[in-house]
Amino acid sequence: MSGTAGRAARAPAAGAAPAASAVPAAPASASARRVFGHPAAGPLGALAVGAAAAAYLYRTDPHQPGHLLPRCPFNWATGLLCPVCGATRMAYDLLHADPVRAFHDNALLLLCTPFLLAVAGRWAALGLRGRRWRPVLGARASVAVAVLLVAWAVLRNVY
Image 1 (cartoon, helix red, strand yellow):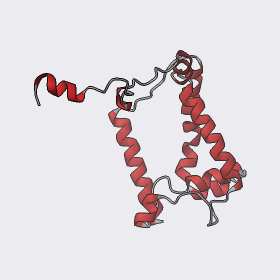
Image 2: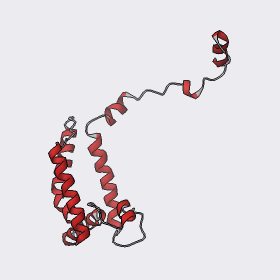
Image 3: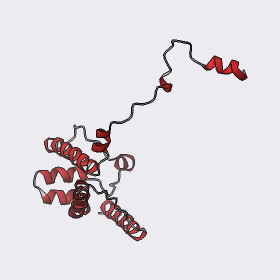
Image 4: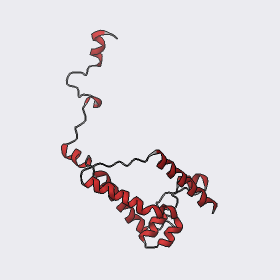
């Protein structure tokens, strides 16, 4: 069809409700944009999710089978330990004040925990002040982290 006949065929009939795609989405309210767009929304959301996960993990022993915690996909596929395998068990042990067992579960991650907490604290502090912070690793730092993780994975699987 061409010309006006084609346009008439596509036009809705008089009194018919417009198609769902023709209805514009409701604009987000200014208060919702203010709350969810605030720089503190990310760190506070991460804190809330982390607190909920810690509350669940405190009552769930990942050392024992029969719980809802997922298995590491890398370990499931290969049978090898990835660099963060044992992180859930380590967190459980730290929640129950057992640093020796936590060290046994994942020593590298346990040693990096103070640094990770400092990064999370800075992210939260700047967010609460209304400033966004997006840390960027340089090329050398990215390579160093990758080499460290690969070396740790090899070391964990050899010994």
